Amino acid sequence: MTRTLLVLWMALVGAVRLDLAGGSLPVTLTPFLVLTPLLVGALALRRYQRARPLAIEWSSLGYLLFVSIFFAAAGASTFVSLDADATLARSALLILQFGGATAIALLVHDDPDAIAALRTGAVLGVALFAVMDVLALLSFAGVLPRELSIGGPTLRLDSYGYAGIIPRLSGTVLDPNNAGLVLLIYAFLAPRVRVMALVLMLLTLSRSAVLATLTLGVVAAWQSGVLHRAAPVRRLLLGIVVVSTGLLFIARSPGAIEGTTRMLAPFTERFGGGEEGSSAAEHQNLIVRAADEGSRTIPRALLGLGWGASYVVLQDVFPGNRYGNFHSLYGTAFAEAGVVALVSMLVLLVVPLLRDTSWRPAVAGFIVFNLFYQSTTEPAFWLILALAWLARSARPAPEVKFA
Image (cartoon, rainbow, N blue to C red; front, side, top):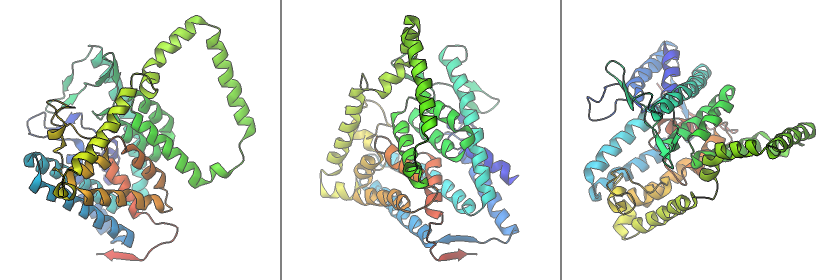
């Protein structure tokens, strides 16, 4: 039963499309909010029955310390917030997402069977992404409605559009960039479905996720020593021949050229330097804007303008949008909660990058992803970050045991 819960929890960790309350509550009742307390109780009972006390290293205490500092800074920003109600609400949601994911990490980090269940959950998660992408396409085409009622619960099928004609498919997640991050985590955890996860990631049209994936791959190759090995000449030559043959076939057929160009147009525009150059410039301007807003006065630099309240000063960029933000975790942390929040977040990300653990490549991907987006609203981010801190490095530190 515990394993089944863990598999479902991982597969639905980012599933904000599904509202189990059917809109009857002021917030979306996601599977994460329902399954987390059940899973924490089941995992704690399992440890008790097996007489396995919770054992963590000193580095894990460091993680909890710096997370506490970050949340203390976010909480303190309430006193100077430009929208105190928004700060309280979004801080509470952040604590729920962090707390639930971290509790799971603490209970499974030293349990190989539990980690294996997380990997199985990642496989199921990729399959659910594929199913939801198909449903979203049908909804985009008008075959299905934008929302389905499943008895009491409701399932949203709407998707973000690119250029008004191309849907950015985001699976069980609503935001395509966060969907790309969840798929990156699934690909990292489950090698069996890695190719499928990466293909689904491309359908999100998330540049932040692609950059994070490239970073993860480079760090993983460096850590495993692949970059220091001799290149497999035969495989490289075979790959060159296959690619060259395909390009030659396309080049000799005008129809193939036109079809290929049409098919790849959304990707080349999105990931290339075409129309999206203005979008990239806007992201850079938002980071500069965050630095400017966060450093206007000394109190602002220390306490920020209020966690989740950046939309107040960004109405010129996102008019009428209460969720407008600086599209960078580092810029948002500084502008909304001050320099202490920024420094503590940097420590949370950099320290596990320096430790020799199997989670290091994922953390490297997180660091890059958060340059032009922010992943603090994704429980999967907090889960992997906690596991990276809790993992044993090459030189084990002393253990602290709690009954």
